[in-house]
Length: 189
Image (cartoon, helix red, strand yellow):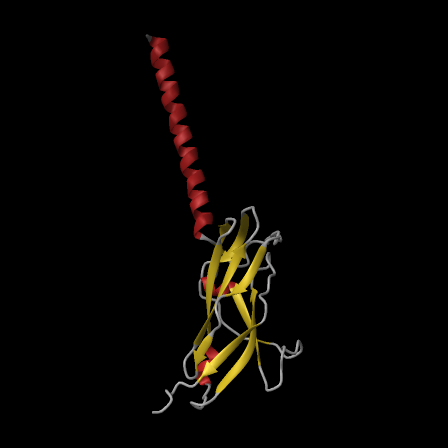
């Protein structure tokens, strides 16, 4: 009987310690899942085989208002890809480069790209993301310089643009796209 009681007490003590260890581990995991402050960790390069940054659609914006360009980080490989430093604010994961598309131009001039400046949303946090095969992460990026433009109703302005991930561990760029900016005034009014 005494031996039975000692075994029961011993088992209870083991369960107590096991429960405490499990709580601490789950707290650590949840802190990582909630994010790490920017600059706190150095990230290794992610193997980018099968990953691509794609432009979705053919963006058209109206002058006098901010425009939006949507990108997709696509995993076209047969394996999942772990990205450890994804920014918690989705739009912070892409930077945009632009240049005017002038009459007669068929492709952009590599020396004329201008990176659009933006401020990272505070607090700047990273969290890990796993991108499964065949899946995409959508990233919409606001283009603010358009709200300062004026375009006549019968005209439009065009810009070459490309996106680039802002992640140290995953340096990917999109192909070049064309952003059309139309008038904010409806024709015939």
